[in-house]
Image (cartoon, rainbow, N blue to C red):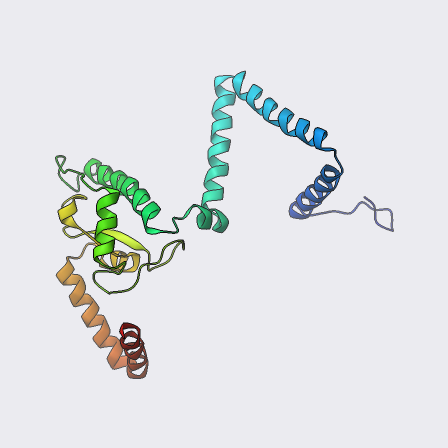
Length: 220
């Protein structure tokens, strides 16, 4: 494409991509249903044939490309929102797999004994969530599902950090509590919270009263 002065217009890579997509969609809309079906069929056939007759190096490159596309989509806001569990049951099923990976990683790093058993099931997690009325056992905050990177999502927290993910050694708290606790014991973490609250009250008495009144109002 040329402008009025006869010079070729220069587009950024993003503008060029958008123009290509717009033009392809415009032409594709005018195709007959038979041609659309043939294009879809031929596209998937070419893809399958490429993978079928590819060499080991080409196949490895195809797999890496797929993994990169999947990883980029999963870490995008749209992918996170779509793939994030929106209710307690799918969250519990996913949590079991994640905890098993962490449990094995702790054993490999030597942070917990090698004979530590993993006996967590999604049914047990659902039972504990119902016992707690879908609220954090420490802060009484209501759990949030379906929102990625939310501080009020449920999280399985180990009571004793030198033990693995066993039913007796777990409690369900918010992600915020689990992150703030770090390597402290439960008593040390509660002392830390009290000390932080006292400092905040002395430095910001008006804000402290405002937040305290909100908490009291939410409990009523």
